[in-house]
Length: 151
Image: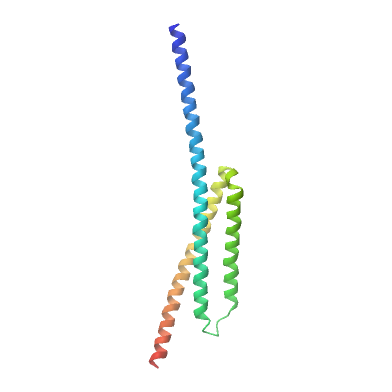
């Protein structure tokens, strides 16, 4: 009887350990999915902010440059179209997040997060260049206005 008690307790301990292990694995999977979904939504918000910042910066730059009739106006339309295309693509990504992400495989979620991070990484230098160009343009306009005022 003593051997059966020890065998039964051992089997119970193994079963309990397996149950705890399965629960921990399930919890990790759920937490990873929740983290991925949260990252996707956060990245979508940041990317939208980046695109809107870019659009505002371009609008401001083109407003200043419109004072010079020698500059081509077509590039403004091309820039607007590029930003609008980026915003449309982001809208499609948000629809995918809403409709498909809750049931998507973890690999798909990871790929979506990676793709959105890559997009933001490619956009950062462009935003920095736009910021520098805006600063240079503002400086040039101030200098131009100062020279006009002095003349």
